[in-house]
Length: 249
Image: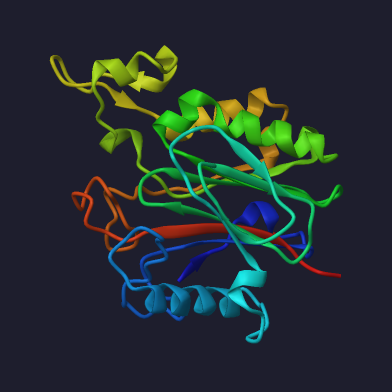
């Protein structure tokens, strides 16, 4: 099953979605798209092909001519890409090349999908707590601007991730966030961080309009019937994929 961002619904030049743990046809077989999980290469490629078909790509389009993935190390490095492949040690990708599908793997971290449809520039960022603190989303916006995008025109979708209610952290993590994104749910309890709120504010601070930002409801930890969750499943889980692409004219 695919989640289709409303933020891009009126933009025919864009294709965007976030997968769930169910296949695009709604079946309950684990739809794992991780590159470092327990599935075989054959299974992962079969899942990738099913995703491409569901997004309207031609069945004959080879994976290695379409899909672009970030290697993801919880940092803030952005790669500007013109060719498909896996870009190691990168947590965000941007492009102005039609026909490519940028992909971000998640299982509690937030996939952030961005586009300036007028300029024909898109981006995808992997924003967990480390990446958020490091500024991966502002870095992605800056890389898109270098390609001609304007923040005031950008659309953004913050995909499903861990909610504040379930994001318990140590004080050494909490102190790295502004106080307004941290709560103590009960006396003596550990802090909880509002990851979605922090990312939303970074987008606003980067010049995006509030009306152009969509934040997905729900929580990966609380809804393991729908989503993969690294925290809830003690690391033994799959990965969802947040994807965005520019259609070829």
